[in-house]
Length: 313
Image (cartoon, rainbow, N blue to C red; front, side):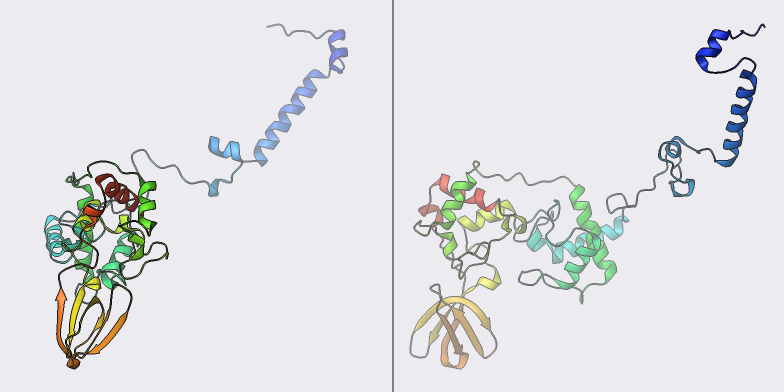
């Protein structure tokens, strides 16, 4: 094949001289070859684009193989016998507060993603072992071995995957803003904030309601509003004492031993007695919280108040 000749005018445009094309091309080829020997070629497109050294790039993972760390949800399930043991221990130790299906009651729901003290196995183990101060969650570390706690946790994990979500719902959705006004309105008949503190605001003889929606199930909260004496926290039991001179005093039991008892009346007045000076000490099955809330509030106001409490997560 005939090589195409370069005219003198083309040499003039290119700035070259006749007879130099071959030598120029040959020099360029030698330069490229020399450079390729000095600089290693990238092993992948990622190297070529980022100029990242080969040893700093993660190796390719073969198809179908995963390198992600295992989690409780992806780990191999525990054998049925161990799950049955976890179920038996859960029902005996935990269901009274957390419900038979773990969906909450006087204790929090264990099947959702709202965990107050951490949701890892280590977090749950710590709570079971050491309990939670100021709550009815008692420490069980001395009563349970680590493998027993692991089986309880495995059963709790299985509850989150099981059907059976509670179908309980309030009659209608209330207005949280209106409920908040009711809660803090000291002139209202409900006047919740007189007894219940929230974010350290007010309160007195009743329990604080911070994060109540995460600590109690919706149905339990509504039942506590309508029927406060149905389930009374032992820390807020009301007692009645009768002195030797016939005086009767009712209040919240603050502390009690074999020899002494302290109580606080609803108005905040504190009393301390030696039991030898009392005619009678009686635990009352009536909550200090008024049981006529339904009579003092209409249906809308009740659901507004409930809607506000459900925002306290």
